[in-house]
Length: 328
Image (cartoon, rainbow, N blue to C red):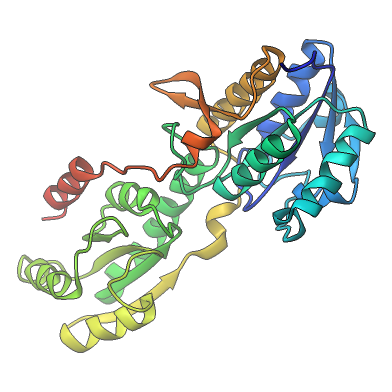
């Protein structure tokens, strides 16, 4: 039985994602709306262990809805992976008379939140914030839409130089286990080929496809590669292989890297973050715990953290076919 919630803390953990500030803002202002106290934990679980906890109010989060990153900061914390570290974190929550915790992050952050809740019977609700869009139980994660637009904008610029010099560009985007960014940005930017972890295209098929493209009259090509694709040991090795086996193109490699995490969040991410932030506070006030608030078919829903942490089944078949058809 969860006791009445009077004080809620919020933290951001793991890799930052555009829209996290909007989610924090929504949590803080939902607390203000429902007349309960809200506290911000700085530097994620590290800050929870170090007791870096400060009270926030509706004015504390003014002018951040349009800001990238997270003003609460984020950090990896090895100590929180231990029972002793989690006990320190729980002791600080109790010391500050906090009744429940909202965790904004990805699967690693949710794993820590679930352990904290299970070991100390402490109410937690998660909000999915990661550009990879790889969390089970939600159609979209905060930051994904902004990252997509950042990638498409970068590819558009690279295409200008590719066309000017008859070059073939391999562009690596984030996505260690999920190809959502690569596949959707690749289609949106008109890439000739898209390599993702879920589809083992293979280098030979890639070379054959590029040869067909060249015969059809294409003088430059864009290949979008998710970082988790295994066509080569890394994208630079893949680039060397393509250059050795495909004559007539200058091959260049571009790794977009952490530029994908930055920038002002899109309107979609700001609205999504606001919905999920309010939903998280309302879930805790309703006595829910060990849940993640997500979005499914435009509706805010709750799913257990255990379910959210299950390996997501990616259904990319239709998009892969669309990519093949539109790249001829």
